[in-house]
Every structure is written in structure tokens, then in C-alpha cells.
Length: 154
Image 1 (cartoon, rainbow, N blue to C red):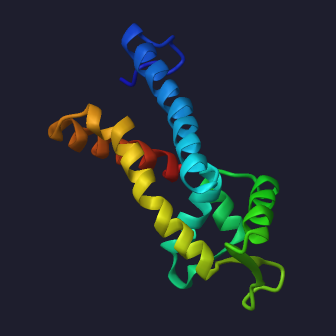
Image 2: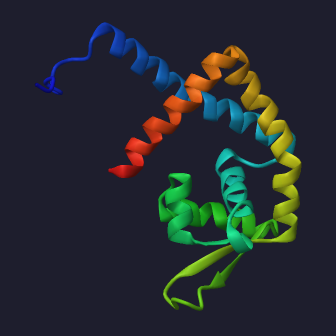
């Protein structure tokens, strides 16, 4: 018999959820501050450049990029405007679908994400992975993948 999902969270579940909530909100703020200090990029700007840098052809539809970065199209459009003004990306028409717009990583954007990645990785390791031993890191990576997979399936 499946448990009743409408029951209140147990103390253990609530504590874990509140810790996750803290991680979810504080970590991006800390990473954002580090990125701004080191490269002048916001966390979302870095995420856009990083997503494009690992995409075949360094280009992606705006709608797909919005999903990938957890942004609305409206918010992403403002982010792309800022990145475009700095020469990091450019909008190009999608020849396969005239209604869609692609965002393409420019050479300067590719260089920027390359310069920013090392400091970003160091800060992420400092804030997350250094607090865990090797076995805990394995568990963390497994659990994050499993939880993300559940969300992707819905």
C-alpha cells in the first residue's frame, strides 16, 4: 500500500527540505556574487554562455535555452539583450523554422565562459563538494541525478 502523500512531512523530511531550500537559494546567490566579481557576469548570463558552449554548433533555440536555464522567455530575452550588447552572443534566424530564433555563442562569449569556468568551479567546489568526503560526493551526485531525472520525466 502506498503511503498517503497528503500527510504532513515528517521532522526528518522537513529538515531535509529546509536544508535543500537553503542550498537552492543561497548557493546561486553566492555563485552569482563570485561571477560578478571575477567576470562581470550574472549567474544566469554565465549559465546561458555555458549551455551554448556545450551545444553542437554553439547555437540553440531561445525556447530551448529558456527551459535549460529555468527562465521565462521574457527574462531570457532581457539576458540575451545584455549578452548581445557585450558581443557575447547574437540572435540568428532559424532557417528550419522561420518563426523561431536561435541564440549563437560568439567568439568573445566562448572566451568569456572559458575564462569564467575555472573560478566558478573553484567556488562551487568550495561551497559544495569540499564539505563532503569522496563517498558522500558519490552519493550526492547519484541523488541529484536521480531527483533531476524524476523532475525531467514529469
